[in-house]
Image (tube, rainbow, N blue to C red; front, top):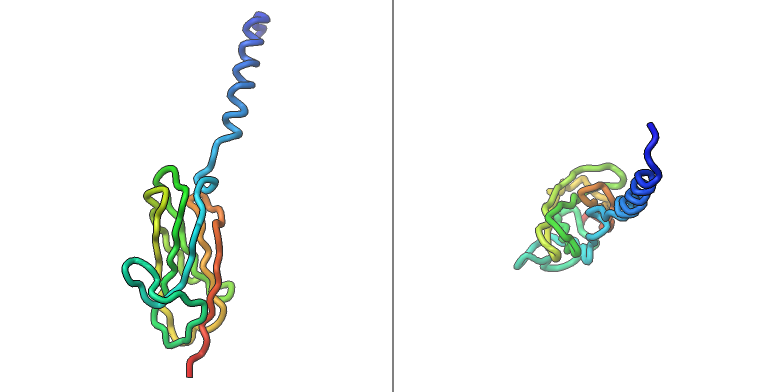
Length: 139
C-alpha cells in the first residue's frame, strides 16, 4: 500500500519523536541508590547500635541496615544473604519514599563461620551494592 508523500513524512516524523523517548526511559534502579549499608547484632531506635564487620559465632542474629535514596515511586529492594558463595536467604523489602531506611536480619547458627556478604538488589534485578562481614569461631 502506498501513502501520499505528506503521510509518509508525518509517519517518519512521529517515529523520530517517539523513538528517543522510548530509549530514554528510566528503570526503577536508575533512580535509586544505597547511601549506607551496615551490619550489627542489635538495633536501637531503628539504627544499628554498634556497627561491625567482624562477629564471633556466639552471635545469634545479624542485622543488615540500608538507607535507600532516590526512589521516585514506591518500589522494593531485596537483601540477598550469602555465606561464602552460597545463597542462604532472600528478603524482599519495600521502599516507600525518596529517603527510606530498612533492614533485614539473619538467624546465625554457630557452625556458620566464614566470609558473608549481603547484596542489595533493585526490583528490576540490578545489583545496587554489596558488603561483606566475617563470622569467626569464638573462644
